[in-house]
Image (cartoon, rainbow, N blue to C red; front, side, top):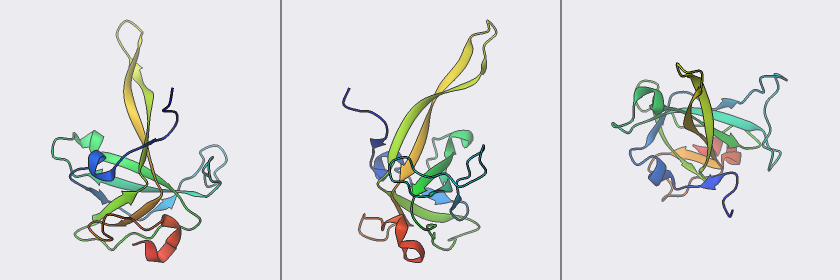
Length: 143
């Protein structure tokens, strides 16, 4: 099979209505070691950005998404535009589908759904940069 692992996708195809970060980027902590995760492909530290999908058709639960970014320094997001919301876009976006067990059906069989893990290589303020996000490793200049 030609597709294995992370699947490259266009930001506009995945999020045609955009996304809003609800806070700053933060280190992604490994649950077991209590240390920051590192990307298995690059060895870089992994940061996470919580975003809210602006698609009016998406359900509330499906709208809250975490996007992981591998970068040597913490990506700095733009200042909030209104309330805590920061309109942003991701560059180098990839998606990895996986099966999540969400409980049990009455007959004892597992109840499952397809879930998605998102990763990116860069982040920027929405509508800035001519469609190209600056790499997350740019630190304070990544906004």
